[in-house]
Length: 239
Image (cartoon, rainbow, N blue to C red):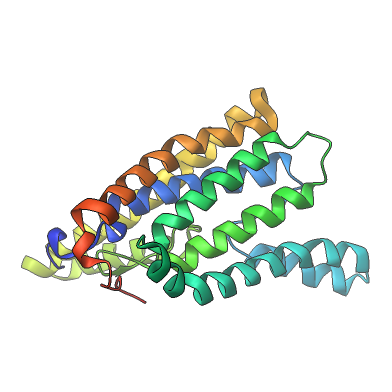
């Protein structure tokens, strides 16, 4: 693995771990009190969509098609505007996305409990998609910040490689094992936090994620405007 100092701030492990924890919160939040939909990723929604079609439940199928479409739109928009936004504002798209995510969270917290679930579902699908498409590699390791499947797979691979190899290869495998297992751990922590807080705060529980997101925003803004000002044209790994 390359040295930590050779990576941009938006590629550091701490950034990805924080986003992963927030994603765990989103998943539990939407499933618990916003219609039983998983908004971090779309595999489960595609399965439920297919089952609805198979049962000729057309209205139910449309219910799942809406968040799936929002996720698609988020990927399209984040891919299309990332470059132009950076050139216009002299701030990385990664930083702007965290700010936009905070605005979305504030909006969702103000929604009354009687508001249609689709508002929360579409909003979180949209921001999760943009986040997944924007934050791709943590210190040059392929990474997802919104779901667990690849982290679970990489944890298993790293375990096997750590047993099979010795020396530097074992050391590298153990490091990757800790990284991916750590991502799974913080995701679960986020989910637990959402589950407990939603019992007492209902929809306003989502404001809890403003704390980690605010810390991220300050860190990334400092990097863009001070620490990495001369590196603005440098493209993060994976893009």
